[in-house]
Length: 146
Image 1 (cartoon, one colour):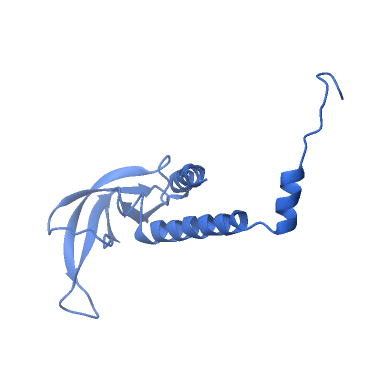
Image 2: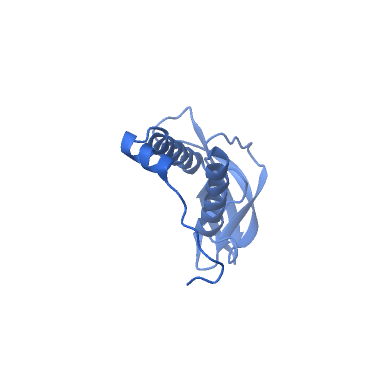
């Protein structure tokens, strides 16, 4: 049972990831951006990475602060954007564009809840259901019986 739940989880999660990215992977354009570290307004000791790129002589800045990602000042990254909304671009990488901590955590919680729900439903049948299951005799059918 656990194997089938994992296979179903991987199929559903990969389909969700592929079709839910914003900006869209299929329609999105890619560009090169430079990382600049800017001081946070609330806390002067924290530097937030900002990806800056230029498109049609217009400069855009996007937040590149992803959990578990560290960028260095002046490093080059690829951003993905849609032509209609280049200000909503994202840094194109496995961690941050394709996978985020919130989505993975939420999906693993759903996986565990569904597994334990399925296990609790099937592990303790009532005595009547168990008796009915033990007494079940399949009905014999002929090959061409309608």
